[in-house]
Image 1 (cartoon, rainbow, N blue to C red):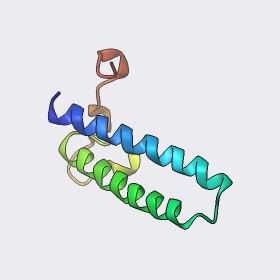
Image 2 (cartoon, rainbow, N blue to C red; image 1 turned 90 degrees about the vertical axis):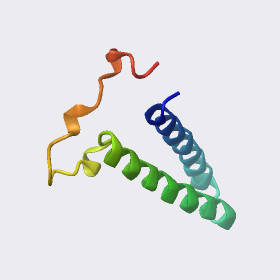
Image 3 (cartoon, rainbow, N blue to C red; image 1 turned 30 degrees about the horizontal axis):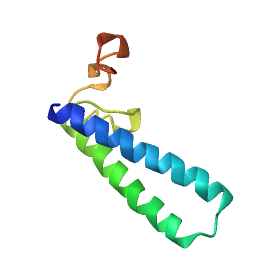
Length: 84
């Protein structure tokens, strides 16, 4: 697995953790430990998203840096075999 694929894989894992923590916090809003975990993984995901967007292509339009060139369309489409 190349660096790009590994980073996308890791971003997916952290995204899954955040989704699960969000669902847990919806039913346990006063759990301080869960909130600390959420904040930790949220910071981690934001950093990973920024790193990926700088190295390869933006994952969201909010990460598209238009100061140099428009790279939003640079991402491969799912039917191009990237999401296997």
